[in-house]
Image 1 (cartoon, rainbow, N blue to C red):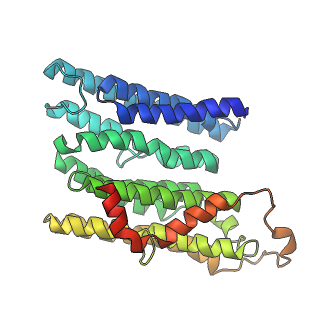
Image 2 (cartoon, helix red, strand yellow; image 1 turned 90 degrees about the vertical axis):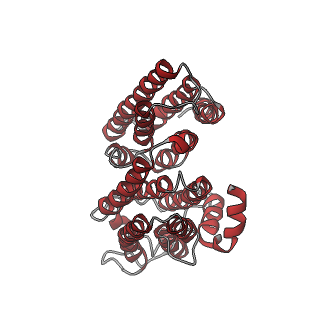
Length: 348
C-alpha cells in the first residue's frame, strides 16, 4: 500500500476514535464510529484475496447494521426526551437498543458471530488493529451509558461472552480464530464489571491490549497461522517460543503473570458486591480459555514435530525484522503483576 494512503487511513482511525471519545452528542459519536469503520475497510481489503474481500464485506455489513441501530435508538431517544446528549437516556427502549448495537460493534456474545470469520480472513497486522484499537470507541460509549443500563443485560452479555469465548475456542486449529474467541471472552470480563467498577474495566482493557498485541506480534514474527505451523517454530526461535508460551499462560490468567491481575480483581469485586454465582461462573469459564491456551503451549514448547528440520542455521530470523515492540509488549505481559496497586491508581 502507498505510504501516503496508509498515513491518511491510520490518521482517520485515530480521528474517528478521538471524535467518539470527545463527543457528548449522539450524532458526533456516531460520526466518529463511522469514520473508524470506513478507515479500516481499505486496510482489510488491501490484499486482493477472496477471503480478505469476504471478511471486509462481512465486517462492513455488521458495522453498518450496528451504526444504523444506534442512530435509530438515539433518534428515538431524542423524540421521547428532546435530548441528544449521550448521558440523557431515560427510556429503556433506546438504552437497550444502543447497548446491543455497541455490543454488536465490539463482538460481544450472542452478537459475536462475525468476529471469528472476519479475523480469520485478515492478515495479522490488520487483525491486531481490529482486536485492539477498534474496541476503544464503542467501549468508551458503553462506559458512559453503563450507570443507566439495566444490570441484568450487562451481566447476561458478560457471562454469555465468557462462556462462548471459552467453548468456541476449544476446537479451533487456526490461530486467528483462537485469538478471536479469546477476545470475546476478555470482553465478557470487561462488561460484567462495567457497572460496578469501571476502573477495573479500564484495567482489564489495558492488560488485554498488551497481551493480545504480544500474541499477534509473536505470531507475525514466526509467520504462524495454524497450530501445526506453530509446532515447527521451536527449532527456529526457542527463546521467542518460550516467551510466547508464557504469553499464552498470561492470556489464560495464571499467576504470577500480568493476565492474573484483572481476573483476580474482577472476581474480588463481584464477590464484594454480593454476586457469588456470576463470580463462580466467570471463574469456571476461565478454565475453558485456559484449556486452549495450554493446547497452544503444548504445541509450541512440549512437542517436537516429526518433520522438524534440525539444521537450525537456515531457520534464523531475518535481520530486517524489528523486535523492539515485541520485546517491550512481552516484558509488560509477563511482569506487571507486582505493579497492581500502581495500575489501580492510574485507572481510578
